[in-house]
Length: 258
Image (cartoon, one colour):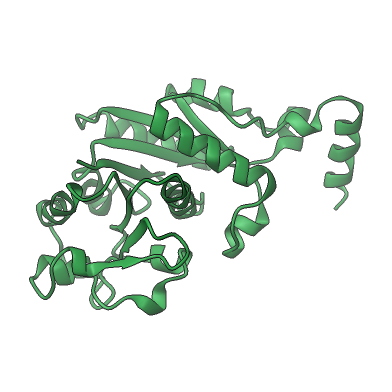
């Protein structure tokens, strides 16, 4: 049976959907069978992030309303054969879909996959509860910005009302130079403030957010994150590592002047 993991943030713009998609790709590369399920019926863009928007024929609402079977609504990623995308409602984003209906579709898929990664809408409104109700585990994605931390804290508080097996934290868009200079909180400090175990750190990398495959530090960071998810380890990418010492101070200076 698949592990059902919901990705939430409390705030938009922190890269939650991208983190879910890149993690799904890493898990698929490792041989795991993965579904990326989009439950953000307002923005419904995980198919765009994965580059398969032109391949969508059915979505989750088609499966719920019986126009197709759950497996027929899945789109296999052309570059990752073990990765499947389940798009959200494209035809009528404002249509009410119950948490029970979403859970039924995901439960029907569960026996054929190892992971179902659920992309949750930002905020803690009805869409949040619809997504979380289908999950067994949660990953909260935040950035070091104060507003993102405040909203992540709210989301974590609400998640505590659910009987989830685990709630973990991923710090995204971590600026290693600013962490080294003490200009922003470190991921460990963020974890302590939010009282949530740190599962991964993803460094700031423009390529990841321009639809390109993660490279360099981001690639290593996502692989560490995938390993932590699969094995239960806590190997955390050190975003500030290359900015320490004499040469690191030069790198920090150059980055600030770009």
